Amino acid sequence: MITGKNYIGKQRSGKGNVIYKTFNPQLNIENKPIYTEATLEEINKAVTLAANAFKIFRAVSGEQKATFLNAIADEILNLDDELIKVYCSETGLPEGRAKGERGRTVGQLRSFADLVKEGSWVEATIDTSIPDREPIPKADIRKMNIPLGPVVVFGASNFPLAYSTAGGDTAAALAAGCPVIVKSHPMHAGTGELVASAIINAAEKTNMPNGVFSNLNSSGIEVGVQLVKHPDVKAVGFTGSIRAGRALYDLAAKRKEPIPVFAEMGSINPVIMLPNVLKNRSESLAKTYASSITLGTGQFCTNPGLIIGLKGNDLTNFITMLANEIVKIEPSCMLHPNIYGAYESNKAKAIAQPELRVVANYDTDVKENYARQAITTVEGKTFLANTTLHQEVFGPFSMVVQCESIKQMEAIISNLEGQLTGTLIADDEAEKYSNIISALQNRVGRVIYNGVPTGVEVCPSMVHGGPYPASTDSRFTAVGVDSIKRFVRPFSFQDWPNELLPDELKNENPLNITRIVNGKLTNQKV
Image 1: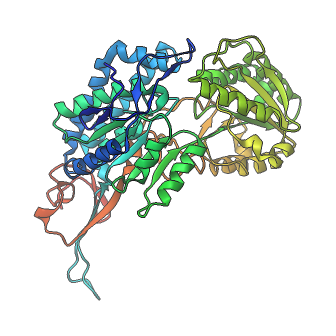
Image 2: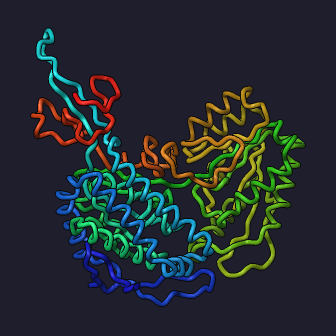
Image 3: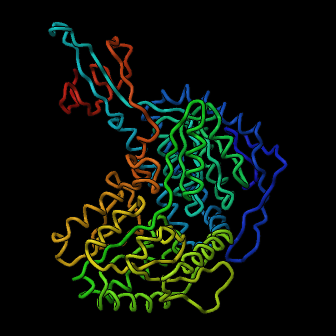
């Protein structure tokens, strides 16, 4: 049941005077529930509870954390149709998308449960002592990853489940042993409250400490600002715009004790189409990319917003086919009037740039908050000279850059801002373009071959991140079990008595995990 209140640990609280509602973009009306923004008192109480919970939660065994994470997954599934209905009413997204995202959210939680139950993720490393080493003895040094402390997670507008309240950031932080305070996204506060109730129920059923999780409502930026500034908060997870992500990053850096902000931000995901493929497969590629550009109304961080090819008849034919295909697709609803407004504004700004040509712009009347898709094209030299054309237009929009030469194509790729993905479309010709591939690798976190960037598989090998501004730290992924590494730090014990060491580092290896002992990977005793 939705109450509109905050979860301060396991207690519901609504002391504030700032209230707001969510919005149904399909019906173009406000939803009925009223939400109360967290006060400074409630923010401070949530963080204090988290700091106290950390003293207990950091020492909870991997098996206990796994039970907790699996219980969260079970409780989310127990919300059943109520969650799906609220999700759809707050996003304008269809039921199939809601159920798919719920499945992904549950899958992420269970994958982290498996990870911490097995235990080797702590990367235990042991270098035993050599007392008689000359000229000086060698100490016994043992290292493992330990949790950072309370983590603030910002809900994402475009993924109310998979990147929000119990999404990847929350699952990774809890798996690491860090309590989580979620700053709920105001566009889907009801979805957030329902999922928060599932997490609290799971915490109580598995005897986790009060404060291991809190969920705070916020209609604007103030709650998030106060959370990031709080001295007991030790890290931040964020998915959203470059402007908001950078503001949080700067705020965290100005603290007396700066903390990491792991922000996954904007990306236009360049697609490189090599000459042979345009000659051989333009028609099928046009259909594939028209679908990819409009998928989910283009509201994905991996939407292909930039297509790059060599100028000529083959590229011209592809542009014509893409333009024809994309206007055949019925427009769909965006997440919120504000997101629709930003799309129209950013699209208009891009289209107004000198020497940019619009080749497709859906011009039939559409319902309120439905986005008209567009395709534009520009010369390579113009794109290089005008960085405004490099900026993301969040929605069903893409730009085709026509390059004079392979050298110019390489220059364009090299001068792009950091991206989440890059795609190479080729027909048995990739080996001839090693410089293009190298340039692409230097600007992105993931390279796709003969596919589309939309769709992020949740698996250990996935990298969802990239050079700034795709993310604030390109060494980490925001998707997959390796994302746990964002919320831990390496810690060493020197000459520590065996009986006082954590189980992960004891000679007996009681957890039977895989460790590096004196340079060799093993699960044997020391």
